[in-house]
Length: 428
Image (cartoon, rainbow, N blue to C red; front, side, top):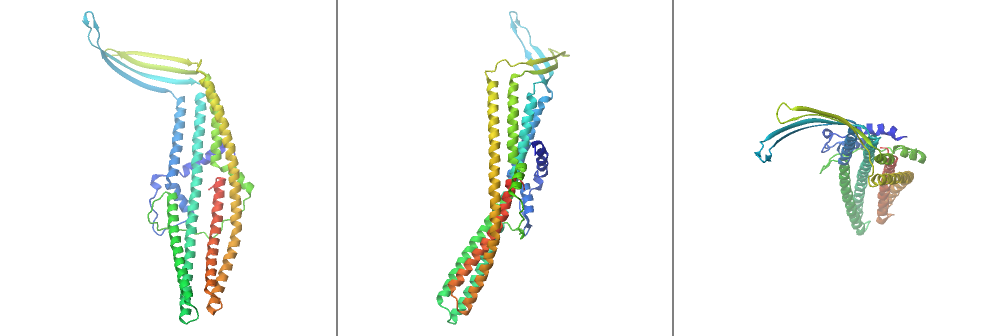
């Protein structure tokens, strides 16, 4: 897709998501359940880095308008008053008043493309700023998704540790009951107590991790809330993935805004070579003024009109070296673009492999979780009837907790890997 075809798209998007101060919020209401889409909307309205990028983008728009102002006439007005006296051989001649005022105008007639090239370069700079904003939005939304999924992962992990504590509490009661009737030794009770305390420590760490995850999420959304009391919506349906690697790469080459930025910079560098060569060319201007002057009122009218040509003769090789500098800058921009294309190719390759890898782990982790649950139930059953020992139960419970955590991790790794691939493709 050509650059000019992409410009209306990213410009329209920039207008659509431009944040307003009235829309910003400081906190999230208690007991609110936020979906991922809700969090994205809050981020676009409140994230200060995005707002800063929009401000820089608008500054480039203003600079573009400044560049085009050279096409318009330059008009100014002035007014002066003076009082003077002079001494001669006969003494002081007497003070005299002086009044003058004028309106002056200057209009560029032709500068052999200098102003037009400057405007074109600045226009590319503006569209490059739009692309930078769009790229920042995509990267920020990826960071939001990561924080969102990390928070859900921490919450689900906390549930696993809560279940672990409940299981160890039941096991402690069971060991105490068996010890009291004399069917099990005291060491089963003390071991159960130690295991329960360790499980409680793990739960405390999980709760702390969940709190940290919430604050990371709030930071990305641009909100400060010392005690967040909202929750996140859990989508239990795994996202589908049918994209081929070739389709992913093609999408990236069409949508990556940083790549568009490099293309715009290369185009600006090419135009800057032409602009530097205009240093050899003359410029033609028209001037005019109308004024009034005199020592007393009414003042005398005066006017002038004319045209001028400025022809550079020798600038100490400044223009020559300016052209050489522009040519080298163009080469640098070309290699930067080539490097960006190679980096995108590698990023797509790695992201695509990560999706395949994480997706393939889910069914294995699910089977392991099911088998671990069955193994735990068997171990507990054996312990109840007196043919199994407590170490067997402890190992089975540890394996079950690890299997649950591994399955949860696999699911969220897969979900986040798709988000990373979307970011690599330049889409939200």
